[in-house]
Length: 271
Ligand SMILES: Nc1ncnc2c1ncn2[C@@H]1O[C@H](COP(=O)(O)OP(=O)(O)OP(=O)(O)O)[C@@H](O)[C@H]1O
Image (tube, rainbow, N blue to C red; front, side, top):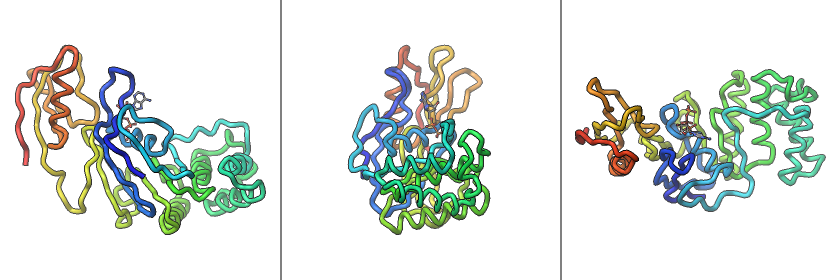
């Protein structure tokens, strides 16, 4: 599966949250994405999972069975955990018996078997999260996208999810994940990226952040810098932006073509 020059913005004139993102997601790969809050990680994961579509660029080769664990699981359906999972299993093409068997098995593995007959709306946050993870693993997806999926799980369930991820990649599935804990699956990812300034940059172990460009610019009154950039307000008004070197031309273009345009005071290279 691959993303080519993918961009996403919300609304016709909204700022670009992601731009020029190209990414190869080979079968069997474990891929980590990190980045600052609001930088566009969840946007990228939703695009990869196929529940959102890019504003520009293309995404090709997505496996037929794709599963996604969102940051917040919408569990307000009038079903028990077991019935919900069984239903989803059938949606994924499993027989009724196989769907029920796998639903029970995953609830058991995550220590939630005692809640199989509890309506989703009555589950605690932690157990809801176990159901969210179980629904994603149920049908053995060729692509598994995990957005902070470990958050809210108890310690044994977190370890179980680590195991389930290893099983998926060993079976040839691709797993793409975001997690706030830098130690999550430490040493395991085959590829590691950082979303910054709307771009996706490879992270090399032990490497620094790479070359940066500093842009000092002032916008019209009340203007805020493009999302996801390190932006420091300046006493004289405007902002000092720190941008990955590969993204600086795009950011300058965005500032200069805004309506009204920003005034660029200074541009300098950082090591
Ligand atoms: N549906 C939406 N409509 C409008 N703007 C959105 C939407 N979803 C995300 N955004 C904006 O896109 C930017 C990136 O958001 P996103 O949730 O992808 O970042 P993130 O890196 O996952 O952040 P966090 O770590 O806080 O979850 C933010 O400025 C956010 O407000």
